[in-house]
Image (cartoon, rainbow, N blue to C red):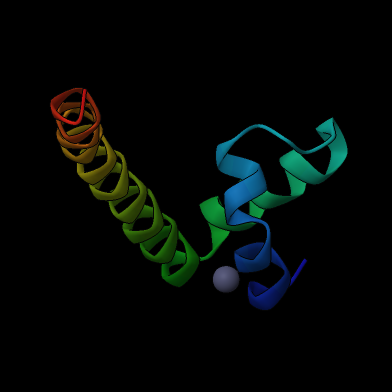
Length: 69
Ligand SMILES: [Zn+2]
């Protein structure tokens, strides 16, 4: 598996949405390739920030809805 293939699978890999064989191949590449390892770290960081933003947004939307009633 090359870098491009590995990076294209980050989201599925994170969600554990890959079959065992591909998952192992991604893991193997990440242990061998420092660049992709960093890239995956950043990818995970980005997802965490996204999650936080969604959590912050949810109550605000809820408030807006309830205030209309
Ligand atoms: Zn790589």
